[in-house]
Length: 351
Image (cartoon, rainbow, N blue to C red; front, side):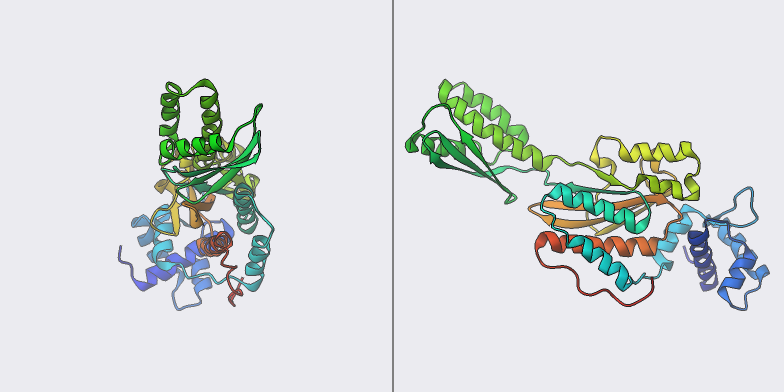
């Protein structure tokens, strides 16, 4: 859609005013804010054209205009200026990232809380694993005559171990035979394939031997289930109530219920070929999100895993500020997981 420079300037002024006030914007307010030679009458005519193009909407109770989802899309694609984070913002993110977080779930949960605090919108965070994780290698290490350590390595270089204690003694030779069997039979199998193979082995192995095999393979299954399991962390759901669009408790509850319910993590889209994705209004597939915008950032965790952080809010959100904060946080998380250090000092600029 080709617009004149004047129409673009007026549309940007209206969207940025509405982002700040949540109130319909009139022609006089636009003319005053732009501090140009455009008269309210000229601005009024341009606003009428923008409405005819589907970029503005007119609420029934007001003479002003508000942006439509198509207007926001044009703003995000062409009109939005890059938001420069302040030193205070970058310091706040870096301090949060410097926390001693060891467990993946804890890091992801904390990332969601940080995003929600920084944006005043509900946030979600999750990890997305490899679609086909397999066991690459088993190692069995003798500790005592009745105890050994199981070490499992996946094809994504994730390593897990467990101490196994037995009611009877086991020789080193028996342990090595078990180790060989596991590596020749149960490597290269996905979670869906490993259980049928265990059942097949049960038909040929002696009872005591099968008990040992089952013990080790059950641990491998736990590891694969852990890596394929995606749990969504949500934070700051009550921030919705701070925005005029959700003063209706019924409307807010519908969205809050959707964000907090247990279910398929796939309801939150994962950007595949881009680090950032913005879905505005009807661009969202889920009915509960049709009147909202969703901004999602992706980052690499390593080991075939990706992390996703995002916010959900009204279409009247400050896209420039939100995308800047999500991008910086995602970059910091990628560096944290990759042990490459945190991003450098914050850029100069406004708040």
